[in-house]
Image 1 (cartoon, one colour):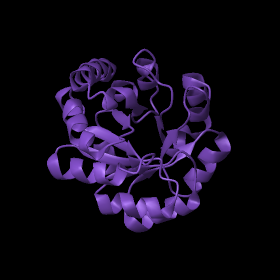
Image 2 (cartoon, rainbow, N blue to C red):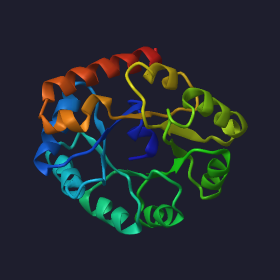
Image 3 (tube, rainbow, N blue to C red):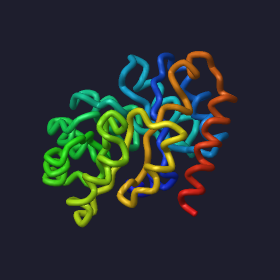
Image 4 (cartoon, rainbow, N blue to C red):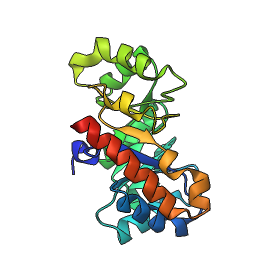
Length: 212
């Protein structure tokens, strides 16, 4: 499966899963809302197990591993069945480990220098993080200017909401948007699956409007 196919829906749910038992119900709630792409962040001890459970139970879901900070975490993600990886920064050891494992990786960037370095490391899909804190859509457009002709694509993540989602989707260089508002940690902890489905369906309507 190539990178473009991961990002076809133009939205990635970024989720923190504290208990592996919540993984499959969460992914089912997202699928019910029309979204098949989830990034399970390696911020909890249950991340690898959560990825494995979703991959086993729901073959139609596309599951990535987020917050990859070390080569060892890349290995854990691959062993669990992750289909893509995301890192908050531009860590060359992590990029190298992902390349060796054949794991598509979206490393994090925030400045022109980092975009330049990422392109030199053969990374074309870059997580723009933390999107809102770093200047939002205006900063993203400024970055896209000098690098637009390189084929670089951005996945802005961090502080984006249902309200700001359309503004990011309108930027031609944005491949997809990462968001946690449809499945916030608190909602997952409360097992508020129907609420998650509703928020996801609303977000997918925004995506459909942007595609149209």
